[in-house]
Length: 90
Image 1 (spheres, helix red, strand yellow):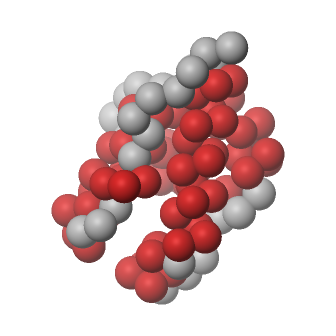
Image 2 (image 1 turned 90 degrees about the vertical axis):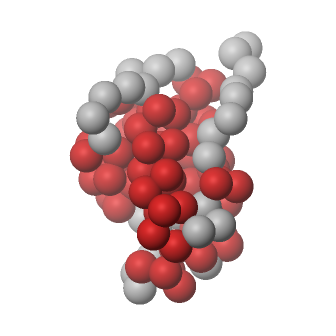
Image 3 (image 1 turned 30 degrees about the vertical axis):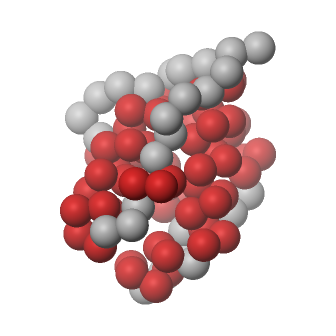
């Protein structure tokens, strides 16, 4: 998971730089945990994240990320820990 690439490419969903960094950090943590690969059968990539976030009904990067993580939580459990809860604006 290329965290810097994800931060840059999340700009298509709006939000602040700090919000995009928070989402990318959670995505990296999820990728590092191997939970996604175990449950879904493939690696978590920048493209995977962007494709799933594009399916969300609306919102900024954190809203979309949390919407998708909610789906993973419902399907597999133990994904709530990867949700974005807050970020600090510089």
